Amino acid sequence: MNTFGSGHNGGPPLDPPVRPEHGQCKTCIHWHAPSGNEQRAYELFRLGLSRKRVKRPSGTCDRVLLAGRSSTAFSTMTAEFGCLNYEAKSRPLRPVGGGFVTIWQSGRIAWQGPEEKTPARYLQETLDLDDGETPETGEG
Image 1 (cartoon, helix red, strand yellow):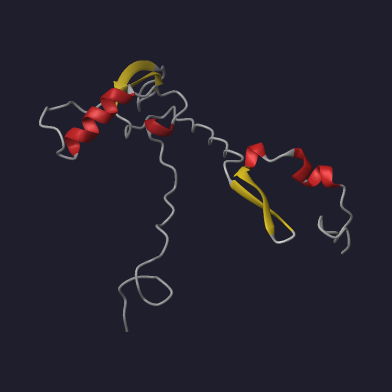
Image 2 (cartoon, rainbow, N blue to C red):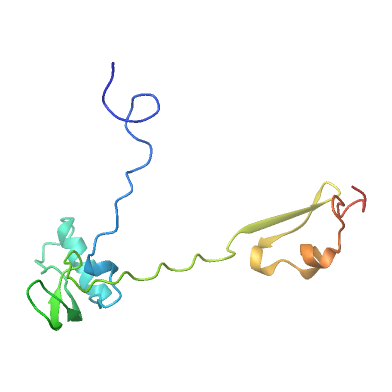
């Protein structure tokens, strides 16, 4: 018997395991990330694409709470650090639109383009269709 993984056919799992959210500064609402330039420079150094030595970028937080302390403090720390005053950032809203639309009429392409620029005459709410009706025939 193959005990290699936990996939449906004995292979490795298809999806990575879901990790519970750790209280790391990079996901905390109080943490201020370092500049993008610092992060890019460090990443290039880490990957070996740059010979210039770069220190690991660190962000700042003015609400760090460590074990054994009753008050918060200001400190710099890396993204993986975690303190006792952790509050998760809210998840970003998913963008709406951005799709490419092709509208067909009578077997031919009537319009193509970005979803946000669909002409009003093709929008569902302006067609006034009853249940089961199609725009070409007006019948269900």
